[in-house]
Structures are given as structure tokens and as C-alpha cells.
Length: 191
Image (cartoon, rainbow, N blue to C red; front, top):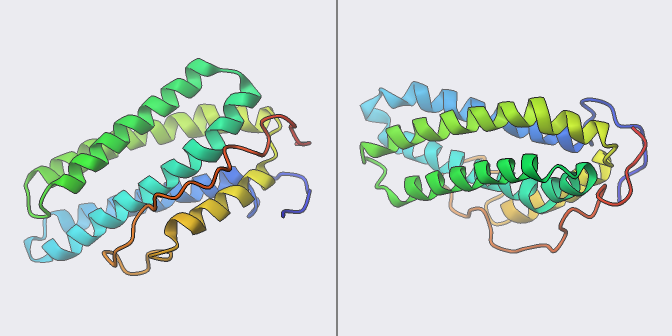
């Protein structure tokens, strides 16, 4: 599927670069939320943005949980670190469920999105400073992982596409691909 080539820190076909790009997109969505937060006349747009934010985070989490984390866990053998990352995902997922259960105009939406942002900022910082460097050091085949993650992302976004218009339905998809971290777990590549 992907060509074997040296992994560069930010190559277009690198799993870590893909995850970093997702992190940047989520941060941008939070900035947009902050801009809309005070504008009462933009309640519909804010609700659509919150929905898009939740879907983006859910898809990103599935990529990590189903492909990246299992490969990284097998490669580094640091169960405590990986358990902490998975616990952070569970906490974020709980907050997303809380947000989705609220009415869009509920005052709790803003507070819950703020807590979600705080938890995600810490989690993103932990990933970027701890997990991603360990993935590079472990010699994971980040190109192959990128291909698997891109396929799953396309599958998860299949009904709604890349979400050019927030609120257009679809969601995080429930289909499992059965691709649990095929790349990198057993055979590290050259890095």
C-alpha cells in the first residue's frame, strides 16, 4: 500500500504528522468556538461547531485507539504510559457524551467544552512530548501506520465526508475495520 521510504519528522505519509495535523485542527476549532462563545446571535453556528469538534475528536481518538496505540504499546512495552493515554481518551469520550446529551442552548455546553479543551490540551501535550518521540525512537513503520489510519479515517468519515459543512449529519461511524495496529508492532522499520 505505501512505499518504503525513510520516515522524516513531518512527511506527508507519516502517522505522527497526521496526528499532529489533527491536533492543530482541534485547536483551531476551539479558537473558533471561543470567538462564537460570546455572540448570542450565533447560537446555531456555535452548535454546529461543537458538533464538528466532537466528531473530529472522536475520529482522531479512534485512529489512535485502534491503530496507533496498539502498535506503540507493542513496540515500547510501556504499559503504564499507554494506560494513561487510554484513560485520557476515556475521560475525553465521557465529556463528549455529556456535550452530545445537552441541548445546544444549554448553559452547560460552554462549561463542558471548556473542561474538554483543558483535558485535551494536557493530553495533546503529553502525546507530543512523550508518546510521539517514543514512537520515533521505537522505529515504528510510521508510513504504513499512516496508510492504515488514513483508510480508517476515510471509513469513519465516509457518510459525512471530510465535514466541509458542520452539522451535516453522519458521525464517527461505528464500523470496525479489524486493523488493530498491524504496522510496526512486530517489525520496526528503519528510522
